[in-house]
Each structure stands twice: as C-alpha cells, then as structure tokens.
Length: 633
Image (cartoon, rainbow, N blue to C red):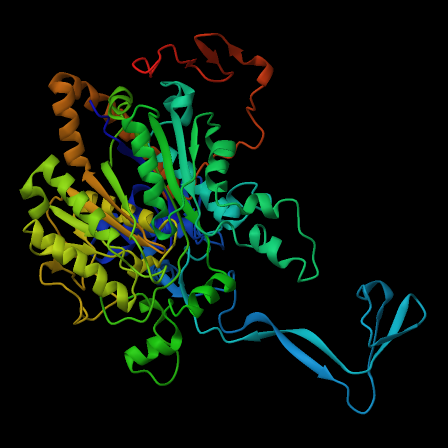
C-alpha cells in the first residue's frame, strides 16, 4: 500500500500573522468570524505584535495596565489591523521615501587643484598618478589633485516601490531567542519550525522516539538566500561600504541554511535533508520531495517549508527594474489619483486591473507523517497531500514568461483528485489557491489554464482564492501561503474573496470560475489545488485533501475498530494542541533553539553489520541486508 502523507502540524508567520491554528487565515477573513474566533484572533495578534504581554494569567499593556480579552479589539483593534497584511514599507526594513544609495559625482578641477586633508592610512594604494601628497602633523596628509576625481556620495532617493507584505508590526523573532546576529530569514525559520512542531500536540522527542532516526526528513529553502547584512548582503556590500566581511556572511547566506538550521538547532535530526529551489514554486518543490520519500518509505516524518526575507532595497530594485512590481505611478494611474499617495493596502490585485506584484516576507513549515505513524501516535490531520506535480515549459524565448508546463501540472492534479474522490468532489467540493501574482500577464494566462481545465472536467463556478492579495508575493514560501490558506478554508468554511479589486478584469477567462470580491461562506470542501508558477518555467500544482476526507481514508484503510482506538488517542492530542494554542495566543512560543546542547559524541556510536545505535536516539538504524538488484547480479 502507498503511504498517505498527512499534514499534522503547521507553523510560521507572514503578513497576516501566525500560521499555527489558522491565526493568519482568521486575520484575513476577520469580518466573517464569529465573536469568539474574532476575539481570539485579536488577542493572539496583540501578543504577537508585542502590544500586550501575559503576566500571571492576565494581559498587560506597555504601561502595566491589565486589558481584558473582550476589550482588546476596542483598545488595539485598529492598530492591529493597520499593522498586518500589505502596507507601506516600515523603516525597520528601509525608508521607501528616502532610500539610501550612492550618487556618483565627477569632480573637476576649477581654478586651483582639488585639495583635501585626510589620515595617511586612508590613502588608496596604489596612489593615483594625479595626486600630490604632502605630509602633515599627527599622521595626516594634504592631497592635491590636478584634473578630476570620481567620488560616490551618500544620498537618498524617493523609491517608487513603497508597499510590501511585512510581518506584523512589532513582531521581532530575534528577540525570542539568542539569535546571535543571524539573518532575519533564519530567525523566522527557527520560529516557524518550532511553532509547527508544537502545533502537533507532541514534543519532537515523542515523535522521533517511535521511529528509526534516519527516517526523519527536513526539506526547506529560501529563494534568494539570506540577503540581509548578516548574510550574503553583508558579503556583497561590506567592502564597498568600507567595512569588514564577517566569518558568518557567506555560510549563513546560503539558501540551504533554513534546512540546516532546523536540523542543527531545532530537531537535531540525523535523517534526510534536502533543499530544492524552484523560484516562486520552491515550497511545493520541497513538499514534493518529502511526500515522495514518505510514499517510498524512506521517511516517516518530515518538516517541510520555506523562509524568505526579501524586503531589501536591492531585491526590490531588481524586480522594479523588470517592471514586475506595482509602483506608485502605476497604482495612481489605475485609481485616477493625481496627488498624494497610492492606496498601499491595495497594491496587490490578482485577476483585477493591476500593474505588478507586491513583495512579501514569510516563513511557513508543515509537519508530515505517514498514515501508520499518524494512527500510532494519535496525531490529528489538518489535511493530506495526495501528490505534487512539477513540469517545465519547454523551449522559451523569455525565461520569466509563463508557458505550457502549468497546463500539465493542473490537469494532472485534477485528474488525480477525480480518480481518488470521484467527479462530484472536483465539480462541487473543490477550489483553487491561485498563484495570482497580480500582473496583467498572469491574470490572463493563469485564468485561461483554469478555464480550459474546467471545461475538460465539466467544472462550473470553480472557487478561486488568491493569498497574494493580502500578504504579497513571498517568493520561496509563496505556495506555503497558499497551503496555509487552503487548510484554513477546510477548517472554517470561509472562502476568501479578492477584496483588493473592485471587479474582475475584462480580459480574465472567468466564465467557469468564481472569483469573488468579498469573502463568502462555503460548504465543506474536499480538495484544494495549490497552483504555483515560478520564473524559469518552475510550474507546480499540489492536490490537497481536507481533514474530513483524510480521516475517512484512514478509517477505510485500518477498519472501524482501529480507527476508533485512534480517535481516543487523537482526543488527548487535541488537549495538548489546545494547551499550546493558548500559550501561543498569549505570546509564549517556547521556541526550540538547541545551540550546542545534546551534541552527539561520535565515539559513542555503535556500529554492527546489522545496524547502528546513535546516542540520544531510542531506535536503532537498520543497515541493508537484502540485495535490491538480486535479479541483475
């Protein structure tokens, strides 16, 4: 039998809030929540944003005043709403109205030579031929230049890109553990991986104690690497800024570091590790590797995800110069504005009149288990992953343009769901989490794919949701934004509309699609299609089944008696999950960061012909005894 990869934990953060227990999803659809869920969402976001802290079971503001849960919205509600989702870039990233840069100036000699004084040690080597140097006191020199000199002067400019999907205002992952000057993307990796593990209702040791330690997998990446000054950004910039490149810049900048940090500081894994980068589809690329290993029995539990912190002037300028990002001029033109600023809350407009995408930052991680381990532990599934399909575009003229590969991935995903759940499920109880990048080209090409697939499988009124409208394009974790939204839809029966557009653009192929401009309540959904389109032809589509469908599949495979015994275990798991949810909503995240603790003494490893015993792991690693190529040798 093929193992079913079940999603039993989810953690991380994006512009809408925490991934675990659907906090971020609830922020997006907050006006559709009941009173209790709305209150819990505001409380959780208030503590995440450090507007409130929990002390002795009470919520306390910065002045030490106690704030009752029911009063959090009235006191901090607007501040929470304003400090989440897409908004004007905040100065902890950079100042979009005065972005630092170097103005190149050629200084020409006038009546006399260009003269200045400086320290002798600051002279360039070799000395330019046109420079005349005279020594002064205190190791200073006078320099006279006959001719001209090029200088680069610190200045600022008004950045045309002013909005981004930033983590909630006030949330600083560096303050939650001893982050040791680590890049922001790795800080959010630590937060997201720990959040995902805690959300399962089990400690990591409880999970790993049930399996051989080599049957654990970690699958994660960032698309750009860590481009902050602590990572590759520092390595590229420091010498030009007259500073020193540190010993950490190169190593911490690698895009594989998100996997490495989880293994080295969170789980202590000695199992499989994998970093797969597929531009904007990277999360799904890593998810595919994980589920293939689970189905093949090579891995029984996996942490899968991506992290990205791309809100830097350099990355934004790179995309901006490609005319890929929504800028002030384009947005104001769309809205008929001649003065003032554009509406920074509505810069991302999937499937509407738009002028480019909006960059975002995020870290998303899920915990996957095979069905047998899920049953044994009593883990509670949020859903399951039937498969992830990846196909390229063939010969291309423009490496960034879309192509035919996404037709293949979408058709395969829908066909798989039909073969497993039947026609009625895909026609009446399925929906799409669209790539929905908010570019004029995407709205046409992606909607045409959905229209043609819908006609093929006789689907009408196919619901479409688009997370980038709210959190921006987070690059590597972008399909993680889509997965977390899909799981939120399964749990809450609310379909997010594209509320940043007034209407669907006329050139969108929406005859068979349901692209709403308001959130709406939906019936139980069985299957979600997660679609992602990355630069270079990195197309991926995942088929996700709901928790309800996943549980029904477990019962059919294991029978009623075993399933009922599993439900008893799952009830206890839910109590543990609720305990962590309560702590997390109070801002107590219990981050896992094992810097140098529990290191393995290699001299204590025991190796026999049959297996290996690794210190601190309960189960032994089995070594191969059978010849897999018996028919060939």
